[in-house]
Image 1 (cartoon, rainbow, N blue to C red):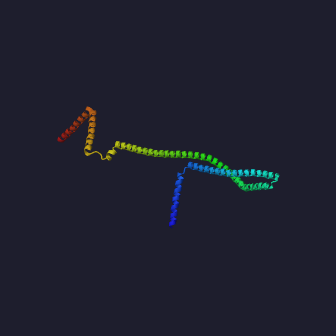
Image 2 (cartoon, rainbow, N blue to C red):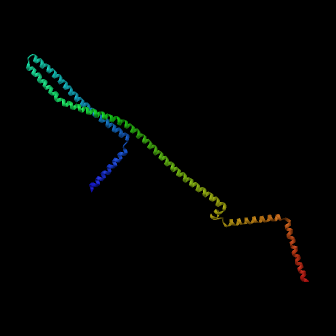
Length: 260
């Protein structure tokens, strides 16, 4: 149980570490690092090729020297035979055989070095081709990464601007709604003030003010009545005087009749 928990914790830590590394990795740096590693491999192959070529060349020089020695020993053997010195001829031929034996022993090694050199040359050519191709792709990918990074930055900026514009639009709408509400309330208040409803709703005037208002209204009525009387003139007054004697005559007649 404890080992399982420990392994799980280890996996979590490793996963987080890998995630952190992925986030920290820069494609341009990764490409440059890979290119440097390929150049190091190319350098190692070249060094190995130089070493093998030097070994092959050394064997070839030894073989060449032995070949020269063999030719010289052959001449010495012939000269000894011509002079009747068979012993010297045998010695020269024996040395010649030893030199040839050395050549025969070195030949497989020479052949092996030659084959290895050819393989390394092929490997070097292939690796050089890969390095050249990778260098071109590396620069292209770095340019694409730089462009993508710039586009991403621009898109993020545009996104921020769009969000800011959206927020500004929302704020503008809220301001417009608030202004419209205030305007509606102002219009409603004006209408209530004109109709007098707002005054009544707000508590009205006191009793003294009401009585003063009533007296003012009565004064207006009296003024209008006086104006009407002034317009009627003397004819109106005469009509009022003639009507009174008529009433008195009727009373006298009534009294006379009663006394009769």
